[in-house]
Image (cartoon, rainbow, N blue to C red):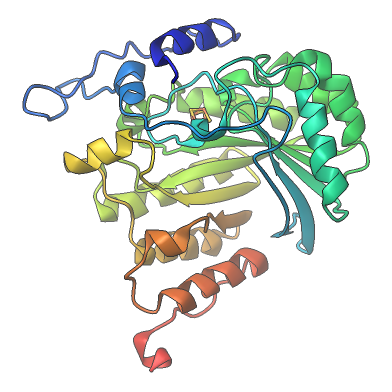
Length: 347
Ligand code: SF4
């Protein structure tokens, strides 16, 4: 059984996060169970509500597959997608459940190259690779720097390498990868929402200014940015969820982001269930996901995907669910808006 508070302190202390904008984390639910005036939810509140994490092996990725994606070239290309097992991200975002498949200890040196070899030995060849590590690829505790040379060598034949990072951890190590890799380096960063008050409540410890600066750093070195954007995070109504998703997509494209991935906000990490009980969180409807996707694609500013992971379970009772999800799947691949599925067409 883990001991969250102790681990949290160790994890955060082990990283080189610029903490100048760290939230003070004073917010709690008050005695009536409602959010207090400050409305902030701190690390301890979030950690206290966590269910147990999954057992993972530091030498095996917790998942890996080849998926097709609409590439920047506008063609469909295969992407080897590795979900690396590594030390937990030092941030404690309110909606995050990625910690479930992470380690409570630093990743052992050599484990990440071993995982990459393990997956690539079993996957069919692909021209592109995602190294998603449930956090920050440039976090020394998650991906030991002594493994950098071997990792770079293992992905040397790929055209594109996509990693994920928190904007505050885009720095010298990103530069090193960008300088050394032959491949195009794409960085996926959670923008979440441009709603300033709700972004702060998400405990992301990031300002929009920091996001923009990190994007500029990546673009200046020749990389690309993919933004993760939440559809209806906590504390929003359904219509606000769609409205602020659209604003967030526009902000991302305006600062030079090349690709936006819209994620319907889900429960599953304990904190979100607690907020749902208090009336502060309801997942977005399938109709809102369709609206947000149509709106973002219609901008024609860059690639847009919607995250369809587990979406059948998210919308068990939605009318014409299978046909509507199939439409979204095709639109992810084509990047073209199809006519909406209506009840009349199905009958
Ligand atoms: S930065 Fe990303 S991985 Fe880390 S807690 Fe936030 S959402 Fe989760």
